[in-house]
Length: 372
Image (cartoon, rainbow, N blue to C red; front, side):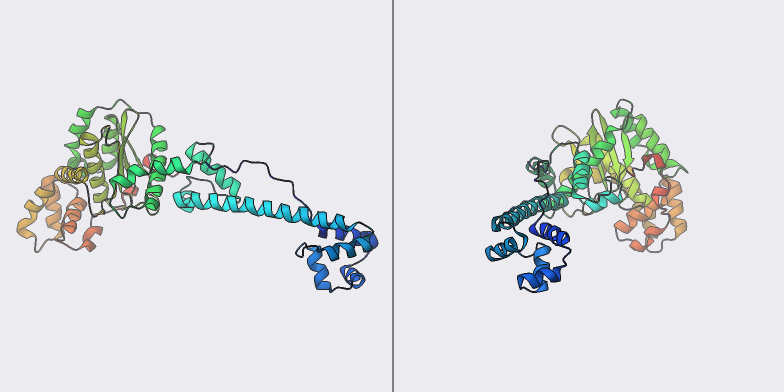
């Protein structure tokens, strides 16, 4: 457990401060003292700035000049050097703590996203981090243990560094979900809505209509940008008795939105339980476990991927935009989803993904976008 809330010694003034007082009393300048002591002006300047320790010989000389004991100057210097070491140790403690914070949280990214206030001192940073986690001290051992489930369920290249940043994002998602008040969750209603997801994709305001219906089934939804190094597309978890779906808009395409929603709903309907309490998804992961593969499969079914390929198979080598629109009308599925599926299968170039694909954030009601 680490804390910086401890008493520090009052600031000590070095012998240089008192030498300057003696010079002022005598209306001397440093050149005068250099002449009296028989040393260079540069040497005197270092002593006055406390950059040069007081030796026994110098203490005797200062005692003679200023009519004090040598011990007076030796004590002033020793106490000042001891204070400096204490101050250095405090800075080292702060640097170590700051390093541990930055290892576990992308501080600058969190400030950019307004998750943390900007800071000018370490104490301000420290306090804002405590507030973010709602704790009084930073217990990094306990904190790191909470990232272990993330490491256990991800691929080998998901290291401690990425796990820490992902855990930070998850904490923010939980805090955001807790602010929502929503109706009791109805699993049957969600399953029925899931079966109609393709038809909402082609409605003029289908995205927001679907989100409203999602809320009416008792599912919390919001858009929370991913943190750097986390590479998250979406998440599903419970907040109290209500399931939560989060879209990160890592890719701001319409097809990515619908696939993410379909994937996370599959987790809610089939996978979330006492053993699997959360799913934090990166669709670019090379090695997906069985539950992720199953969610992908169910999302593909709801978005009619097989029907899309069947409908367009006869024209697959010379597709036109008209063919895509005809498929969209016949299957009641957004053309961006059709383009996305064909690009994923490498049937067409990924360059075509811009077709029918607006910035999905422009289509989502601002009240679902978390900017703080």
